[in-house]
Structure formats: C-alpha cells, structure tokens
Image (cartoon, rainbow, N blue to C red; front, side):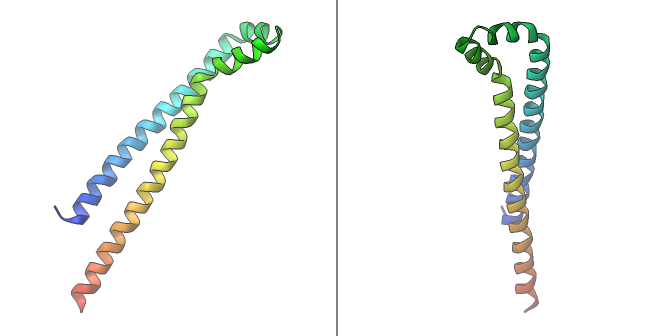
Length: 101
C-alpha cells in the first residue's frame, strides 16, 4: 500500500473518530446542563447541608466531566489530523521534486 493512500485512510479514520468525540462530548455537556436545571432545587438543598452538599455537587457533574474530556480528545485528534495532512503534502512535494530532477 502506498504511503499516501495509507495516510489518507488514516486521516479519514481520525476524522470519523473526532466527529464521534465531538458529538458525544456536546451531548454529555448538554445533558448535564439540562439535568442540573431540572434538579436545581435538590442541588440547592444539598448545598445547604455543608460539606456533604459539595460532594453531591461534584458527583452530580459527572456528565460534564465526561463531555469535557471528549471535547479535549476531539481537539487532540484535530491536531493529529493537521499533522498527518502536512506530512502527506510534504511527501507529495518531495516526490514531485524528486521526479523533476
């Protein structure tokens, strides 16, 4: 398999993975916001009880943490895609220069 074909397949796979990360991350963040709004009375009541309430608040934000991790993973994948595309362009440029000589 030629290197350029391999890299283009790799880039395509990374784009799919990045899209999945972004969609799931946004869904988890929106889900967390909606659940926080729906359960605001319970959360406020728990916060009035003292330190246990803070622990409850931290635990109730689990989907927010997951969503943020997935969004950061999407950003890492975007950087990797850019690096692979630059590598592909450099390889094709070097191949063209080698053919002209």
